[in-house]
Image (cartoon, rainbow, N blue to C red; front, side, top):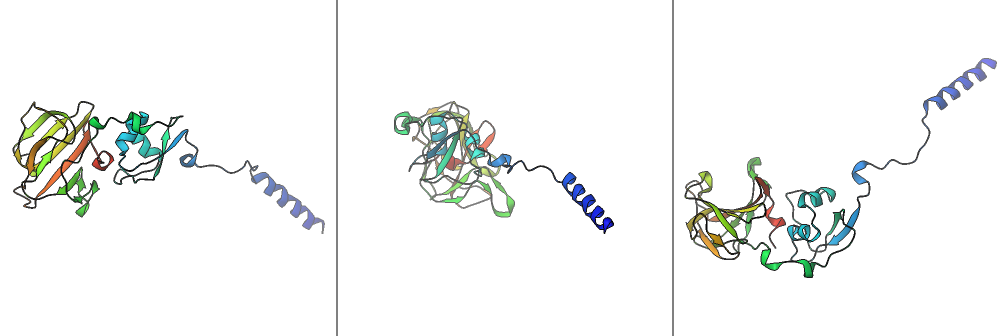
Length: 220
C-alpha cells in the first residue's frame, strides 16, 4: 500500500514539474491588431486613389488586408488603412484630372497574374476590334516607341512622372513619337495584332519602376 502511495506522489510531482504555467491565449502575430482606420470602398474608387488619399503605399494596404495582387477591390469592401488616425474626405481630396482612365472600352480577356499554362501576365489583355482607338490612360511623356517589341508587336510606353508608367502593346498604328507630351484621354494609337497572334486586343500594363502592378488597382 505504501509503495502505491509513493508511486502516486512521484507521478503527481513529475506531472506538475513538466506542465508550464498557464499564461492565457496567445494571439498569432498575423492576427494581432494593426493601428489604423477602416475605409469603406465607394463606387468608382480605385486602390491607387485610396492610397493617395491617405498617403499610404498600395503594397502596405495589400499586406495588412491580406489581399492578393491578382484580385480587385469591390464597392462596399472595408479596407484597413494602417498608421492613419483620422478619416479623409475623398470627394475633396481627389484630383480627377490626375486619375487613370481605361485605354479603351472592351472586355478583359486575360487578367493580371498567372494564366493559361502557368504563364505570367504582367498586365491585362483588353479585347477590341481591329483599328479601335487607344487612349493615354493618364497624362505623361512618351519615353518608348518601338515598331516591333518582341512578341508584343508595336509598343508605346508613357512615363507619368511619379514613378508610374503605362505600357500599350499590339498597336497597329502609333499617333505619337518619342518625347511627345500627351494628355490623359488623348488618342495615341489603334489596336492591332502580332505576327504570332492574329487576335485583336490591347495588352496593357502599369509599372511602378520596373515592377508590374495590377492595372485594376488603378483603373476605375
